[in-house]
Length: 385
Image (cartoon, rainbow, N blue to C red; front, side, top):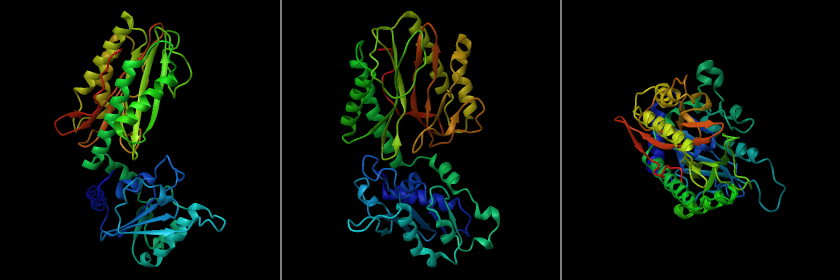
């Protein structure tokens, strides 16, 4: 879970990034409400995809707005706020109203309190009419002041992970490691992709000691179809297939994302050759990871061994990306990226080759970027089985 100390630290960083005349902000993106207040709606609940809204004031006060059912689907801990304003949405007696309208009614309760103070709204996800109610003094402000992109600012702040975020990410990594270890032990010809997925989910859940979300690529490639992606199917693995397991384990909105490729029934010499090229690409990319390095330079280093092999044209995706509350998020490691690695970024490296007549191979690790280099967060055994 996110800690009270971590949430307050993130709020302070937000206020330090805003001009002093901004006295309040309204946070609307559910990920950001969680980021600042530990308010996370369990997706395995009847309120999945619902949300609350968070009002932050420069004096430190934090107020959460919710309907009376959404709060029942929180993660096990209470949100880190000063007060919660709950509007009745469903009372088992009357017909229900639009859930967003319930939030809108709750927000109106603070309109009078805010009317003479300048604030900024995160426009995404807002209930219809909320901006008109809360931005009462907008006519006195310039267009640039009215349209500060609060969401983009918060996404930038998210790149510097705090200790409580890293603790959650490490738990996701450990669950992912357990899933990959299980796959290495059980994958064989005759199993379906779906059966492999079920074994991985069980291993990840047992490691996490709680329900988790597992998504990603669980698809077999072969000589004729060297590239495949998506959720598992009932396809039964065959001798010579290359099973790409590129998956994320998600807990409390945070996630891992790393990959191994397993040669079903043992690898051929050609598959081993491709694997070694992809390994060399990952090592070349790792050698550049450090705060201050341009993401496009990390891409170039990762791509060099593949380009020199003559197979580079089979790899057309990114070399990696940022990871945390989103997937992908900045920085993106692509040829024309304008991003620079920052201390506190969590990033992936995922070189790959997809060669007709041989098959497809992708491997991936996750890293915490530091001033001096990196800490590798994923610890699964990368091999062909």
